Length: 151
Image (cartoon, rainbow, N blue to C red; front, side):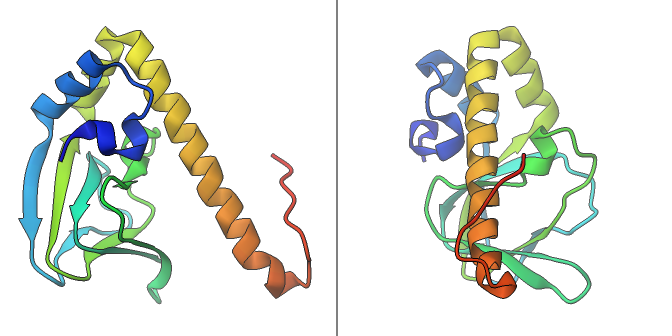
């Protein structure tokens, strides 16, 4: 999969994406494979190439999100300053991913500040969009007809 099709890398220049592509490792996993667990050290960013990945959190394994679209990024905690993952990622079907080491990616983005800025702007946008999706999903639980953000 080409990184130009990935949500997180939209807006980055071609050279920046090409450099990150050189450190991305393609992996195939069987159904039921756990890519990472909540509270594991957050060392990699993942890009879904094919298959489905379920993200769950908490002791009861509440589903936070089902990733089904090629190009979706997950394991954001690794590039957002968190030491550990905030969810567990499990392959629901046989799945292919790109796995990107956060330290190596950070070094590349520091060497190319324009690409780094674009990457983190896109990350902030996607995190914000996911937060708004959560607000919308919780709204009926609280009897509210609209979603408001105070942040």
